[in-house]
Image (tube, rainbow, N blue to C red):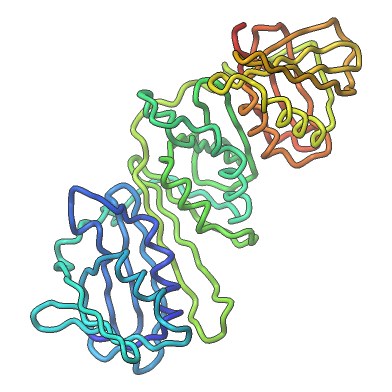
Length: 382
């Protein structure tokens, strides 16, 4: 195998797949990237057996000097390419004794390789499932508005991912860690004849967020029993670089997501309207003097006023008063400040509404202008 390619073009392809590669893995070959070169295209694969990324780009005439395939250490290859001067030409050559020789200008690097045939791939052939059509912009938005509420290292492994639910012409993303819940939905077309659910792992969600653009280009998701598959086209902004096509595949979490509808409070009779930015900034200030472990902040609701209060074992205290729209009986609640701040961080409107029932019951937080986003936060027990 031998390839001559511009450093920027090679680095562009590598950067789209390296996110799937773990720095340390029980299988040494999974620290490598699989590289395939034909006269027409360069294809690079990265995988950790859970998430697989395959990026392909067309090669200029004469770039392929010898067809072939191999696997090369991912981080070393990328670090070498990054260190080369801009506009450098990379000569990548696999010798008969399976050594990878990379030359550029006066630089020469020799890397060890492992056989391409030994590189484990997810079985994406003949995958059957539900086809879902949605724009890149909307799919990215679903993940961005809900990813923060995924559980981290929870024994309830099904909470460490994002639930994608297809129901009629709605695609819904739901996350929860048991203390808060995030839900966002959008219009989508699908071949499903009944509601379909799939739990996408945390790492896969992060990679999709990175790969998806804010363009309105249509995407086609294929959701099977065990895998989710999507192909994303990456138009090049540089006229000298070819477009890149990325095939993204992830295993789905095998588990039963809890019935999130039962968690969303209904019939709340106490509604508060607060200016979004003022509320967020006040929370951030008051939380500075909260207990470092619990991060608790007291919210005392009175007629058209809200008092935020926090203290800690060092006897520090912070108090701030806000003007709000509230016309019900007085109510005091305590929340983990970070949970509320993270919800406010994904709401874009000028105002935020909080719908409550009792001091120890969960609160519904929404942007009145965007009813397709729903957030639930559990209060702390005082």
